[in-house]
Length: 254
Image (tube, rainbow, N blue to C red):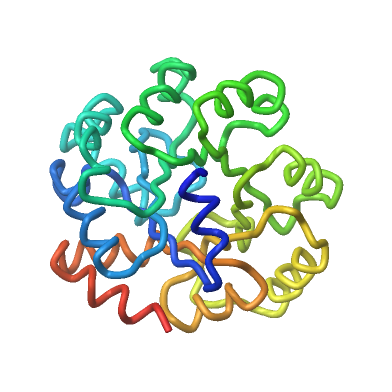
């Protein structure tokens, strides 16, 4: 069974952390993953740096740019992760834009992910219809979960279509803005969380965008299975370094 599927079955609210591979330093990828697992994080999204990250706010954009300047590439990331399953057992996903994956070759990329122990991909700019018609069989053959995104503006019909082609969890974007733009959730977002929960989708939802502390984590997971923290974690890495990871996570989890 896929590690993501196993993790989703646990009777707890899940914390997923996002960071840009190769940041703050090019060789920090594996130490960060090891520290996150040790601190009690449930899942990690490894950001594949890209020069034009449209959905990302300034914090993640800056970390992605620095990672590229540090020399991070798709091939280097795969080399860094080749032995990751010797020391890290929690689910790992690669989150990135479709262009680098297409350049690498979708089939080859998925095969490499399976070889090194990646459990899923999050590709914000890959339309669900294209995934469903052209790439779903490749993902399934390689036992990879493709995590699709919904927003407050996504229609019910499209949400149910996304749910029907998904096999894992749905990434529930909390707002239509880029990452890192919020300090809490208002009434409109609460209503959105409640509306999605009432749809009784077959796939659990994990909320992303706007989670930065224990209060927003608890608010986001009131109606969802888990939450993702990206910008706040990267800010902490920037200011306090890899050694601060355990303290950061302990301040989030109940």
